[in-house]
Length: 424
Ligand SMILES: [Mn+2]
Image (cartoon, rainbow, N blue to C red):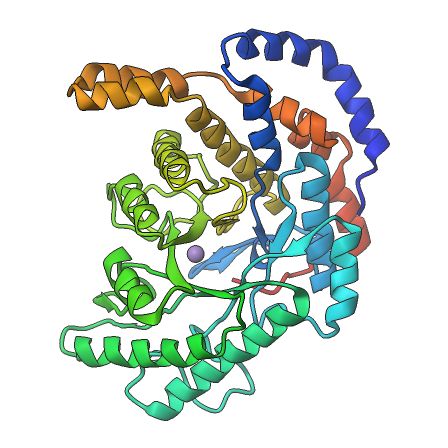
């Protein structure tokens, strides 16, 4: 369902006085206001093709109705999100859940919605119907060379689909690990993974990157072959300049200092990008900013500071993507909330008085440092983000417009109540 621009303009018109009042209040204290708004305008977050349907857990899945039945319908849903927030201009495909049968036709559908294709994602954590060898005991790390070969070939096939779509990065997350002590020889598993990744790396086109994601546990519970950022970075360094480490916020043990990890990966030029989500206990894949928005702000503070130190463009130098699962919410509403939370954290980080912070750090003034960070964090930047969206032609209140247009009911009418999107 296309969201008409006139409906967005109408809704914006109704909110315009209130918005102007709120914007003027916060804008009065923002140095380089135009630059800040322009940076917020330019900042987009990719939507994964598997996040448009309802997520499930190992205990069950409760469909919300009107889920996209095809890749075209998934692209339409991202198009609706982008029309409202003007901050989600790309889609990240998961192969084989979303194989484009006709790349040119799919590209045309995406272009119609103002979308392009972000990183493509391989899947060697499940067995597919027509697959000859099983990934039960892993893929790229497998003790059997034939299984590793099959997994390498799958990744090369994913690159091929990505090339057809105009993507330029392969994102690799491996479930490979072990559930019991003694099950694996860690060094052999690591070496096998490295050799497999080297074969994939060799198949990357000139301008492509490979992003190596890590995760400490799950689906296996004793060890994970790429379990943390150190193991990922070790692989990325051995692979070469096209390889770097992808940080998924949910892939850390509780209370890990993710902002410090991010800072050092950036310093090394090895931060590929992000999979945003939030968590309370583990890889919960909750709405970004729903549990710990302060941590998200601290991460963005390191990102902005680190990217500025290297002269990197915030919007385009690394990959920004949501990787979440929506078990009880309308996926589109959840994604609108997540994108908003990311942009709030980014905008707050842009407001940090970096010169004063540097001075506080150099004089070991912990009190001043905290005050400086929290002054930015406690600023209500929502009117700045709304203004950026308005200037891009989006909605002042994306979620409000989505609800007032009754988009989900229309999607249920169009697609049916019991549709199930491919994915988790
Ligand atoms: Mn992820």
